[in-house]
Length: 202
Image 1 (cartoon, helix red, strand yellow):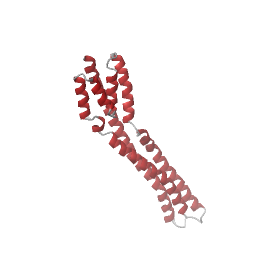
Image 2 (cartoon, one colour):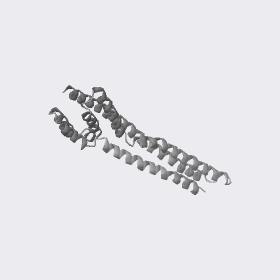
Image 3 (spheres, one colour):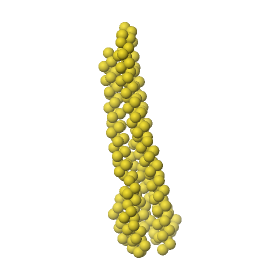
């Protein structure tokens, strides 16, 4: 009687499993991508600032060009425009900062989407499963075996539980990554302002 109910619930588990795999992949990628040593490589920063102190603009530009971090892209925008007016430099840095922040938030929209989609998929699976379970009872001569009905409903509720678990985990990591990205952006802004002051002062 309830085989079809369980089958329906399983159908909704597949997209939930896919959501969990995608969410896990994004979490792992962001944990790696938002490491402080990756965003702010100290040795590279020291080399760039040392080159600028010595007036070797080309060497500093080379360090920035050969690196692929959000900070060095911001630094590069400053170095390439150091001869321009302070307003022009700040405008270029602002644009570079926006691109850098976008890179820090890479894939986070996907994680946010999963926090919304997963519980909805789980709820849909539960609703469909319970409809099938109750429909099976309505076509039988009463509730001959309440245990089977309870089993069918519990199977249907699995999808909601799984959807909520996935959504909660993804939401927590999403908030953590957004907070980290924002704090890094503030640090980059301060470092960029400091570098502008040094270059324009010289």
